[in-house]
View 1 (spheres, one colour):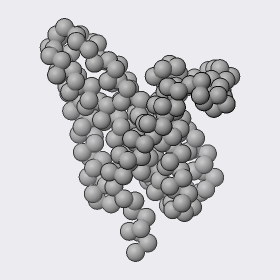
View 2 (tube, helix red, strand yellow):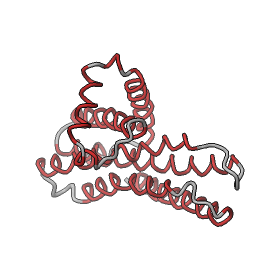
View 3 (cartoon, helix red, strand yellow):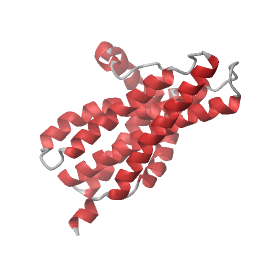
Length: 216
């Protein structure tokens, strides 16, 4: 447990480093080209914040309470993964060396990715506590698959998390078309499956659950 919290502290330090690099770039160049990274990092913190609050209350949380809040967490979970795609914005911009911009975007991308993975780890522990190990694994794999699908919708279809409330019919139609006619959308499923595999492997590096430790 202590190791897990130490990793979280290191994660917050990484986020501060990312912000520091951006502030440095702005102060040197006077340009705001990458200011959107702050917003994307903020969005990545939302699922992390939700899962952290739920984990703090996990001793008192009921099954129905978890499954009422979990969809809200899942709605914002892709935002933490989406920040990886900000690497598309890496191109030569006058003012700073290209290597610095690479370092800048990578720091934000890795921060967002880790926020998402640690958030998922917290949710995983709660599901295991409420249900079983197999339900926990199913929850993780399902979240990764849906999160990766959400990344595609956000980057290439330009949907936001709140668009599910603004244009539910349009989003439902687009999702249904991709599910019913998968061969017509090779890019959708190529990214979704490929990113899911990558995230599932990376998830293993976030550390083991404390559930087994608590049982001993």
